[in-house]
Every structure is written in C-alpha cells, then in structure tokens.
Length: 87
Picture 1 (tube, helix red, strand yellow):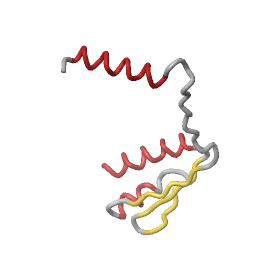
Picture 2 (cartoon, one colour):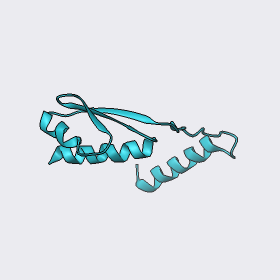
Picture 3 (cartoon, rainbow, N blue to C red):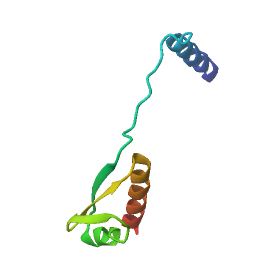
C-alpha cells in the first residue's frame, strides 16, 4: 500500500472510532499522594552513591528506596539515580 492510502485509512478509522464525541476515552488518573520507589543496582557502589541524594535510604547493599510527594518528583529522582548508576 502507498503511504497516502494508509494515511487516509488511519484517518477514517480514527474518525470512525472517535465519532462525534459520543465515544469518550477516559484519561488515566495518577496517584496524587506520596510515591515510594525502591531500586536495585548491579553493584553496591552505585547504591552507596545514591545516598548522596536527600531522603534516599539503603535497604540492602545494592538496593535503595525513597519517598517523594508525588509521581513527578519520584520520576525526577529516579532519572537522577539511573544517571548516577551509569557513571
């Protein structure tokens, strides 16, 4: 099939599914409260480096956990800890 044909097929399928607003898609609701995340690393040195972040505590030699006020803050800390682990 040609790209233009596929594009028209997708467009008409979306219009069919969504219709005139009668078929409403419910949005996903995220947890509004605190989020606790526990992460394990391949070696204990990285877990020890993670302790440099505030509120991070060691659970086992290669595992840490932290509690954040919401999912967005937890995601940011997770990204930092993964970056620390890659160094």
